Image (cartoon, rainbow, N blue to C red; front, side):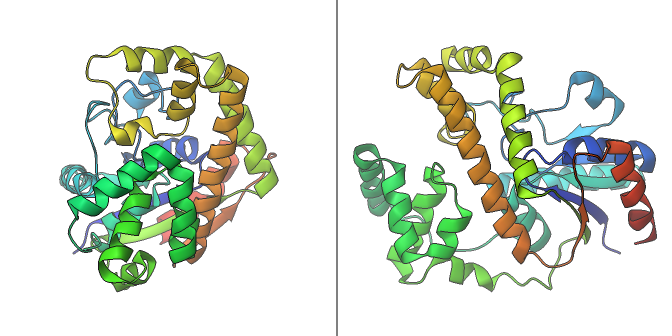
Length: 309
């Protein structure tokens, strides 16, 4: 029998982490983080990791597993997640997968997308263009050749932009079309999907407040310390929302107020791409929440559904 995994999904800043922890306490469950940036050690404030106390109360897996100087991929995530899920299930506890990194969710539940191999010449050319023209120019090209992929990929996510353009140049087919080869009827686990959804304006307001809170509790100092480490930040870690913008400020590229505004804008872009992806994802049981809701009130609505499913 396949291992059951309950996914708690939602856009950035929707409150899924707090709800996931409250559910885990009620269900005697452990949490597998499905977040591409919480894997990095010492990247705490900008990724909104739970506190040490919260993690002591509810076991969390796939946080702080690699150095910020290391690259991390969907394949590495699936390997680590599979090991964590097997370990948790072996101890007879329930599993909640909490997060919003869409590629990781899809890869964990359906398997990895097998596209054409990398072409060093194409990648070198694209990297040169990115250095000369900026990632926005490559994202604009992707918008022309594959608008579906461009809508899903953040304009600052240079690695995924390059890969999408590379696949198109190698195959003549948009990567979004090739990714339809994934069989949505195939799941690697007994998966149940529970989504938290907020109205767009409220979501944006929550994002703005969260950005200010991150600044207040020390995001600038956190990024400064990371940049001072001898190994530096990997390309993936350096592109994380919050870290990229503060890094630009610390290099003297922009005032701090502009960097803060850029974090808000890019966080809203991320939420938009997540909403687009989630709308296409089949089988999600959505719970609409608003500013009047508390964590407890959301849990009281979700818990009976999860238990009965």
